[in-house]
Image (cartoon, rainbow, N blue to C red; front, side, top):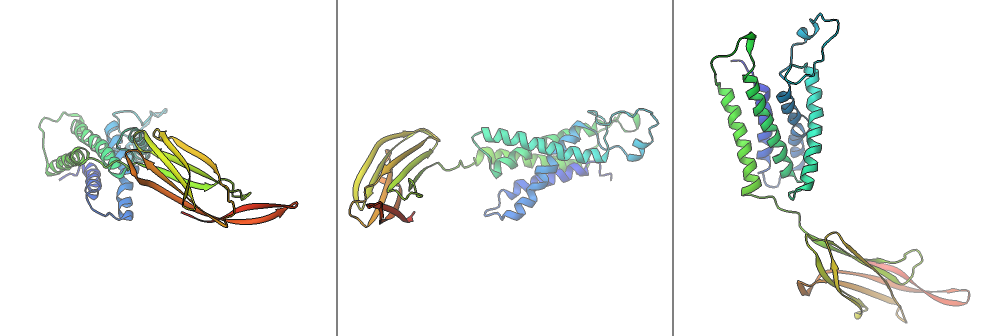
Length: 297
């Protein structure tokens, strides 16, 4: 039995392996990389190359041409050399990866392992099936094929393609991708650590999917000193506030800031604190106080 479509069968086997690997819980990283690399950087482009061009022409046939001016090999629908096929496979794979990456970055599903496997698997499967049918239309020996013969290998290739399509639909619809968790970032830093001034910088940034309203409460040594109400932040918007601190006669300052969301005003959503140690220095006969950072979390 001639293994006419053995290369397409190998491509589909790698696609199926990648789809099945997604179902494994707690997948180790290194085997996943080894499985994904051939699909990402070779097989997707190979399947597209087999769709655009015919199978490789023997090298002896290429060199046997007696034309003084050699005709170009890379013509759509014409055979290409084995070296050209390898280069096309890598080049087309990189082009597919770039285009798929741009598309996934725009779509809500984002750049995730599942979205990559679904996208590349579907593209590779479609190109493999097209290459399979284009090969069946080739005319062997200059005579048109009259009868259609379906071998066991053809049936296996079709079942693998059907499995990839069904698994991709199930992953995309029956078990939708989990979106990235949304959150709000909240921080407190010394305003000027170099000069050791007694001031802090509060900041918050909204990484939620919608606009949120916040309230910030700041305390020094368990005494409330500042409050900011109705801070409205759109997605990706940042709020920064510089707050001077008067150490007074204290030797240490325990500064705490809490961030509240209006949808749950009774519970602090984020909590940050730091400790300043007060050091007194004399400069030109004047006593100056400096705040030295102790700990921060």
